[in-house]
Amino acid sequence: MSTSERHVRLFRNGRNQALRIPREYELEGEEAIIRKEGDRLIVEPVRKGRLLALLSTMKPLEEQFPNVDEDLPAQDDVTL
Image (cartoon, rainbow, N blue to C red):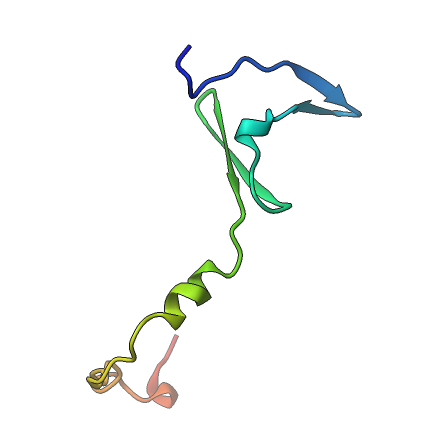
């Protein structure tokens, strides 16, 4: 085992399987996302508000966006 690995025991918590996360692997926050890739479980903390913090550091764009609807038919002319 490398220093980034640690042997842990699995246990039952009611009908769920659980494991204790060692202190050195604790996740920030109170929520996490879990997904399965093959026989691996990936657990990631939910990081809230980071996108807004990043966006607040960016300068506004000076250039105008092109009108992407310019060549489209009017909504009333669209048939399904």
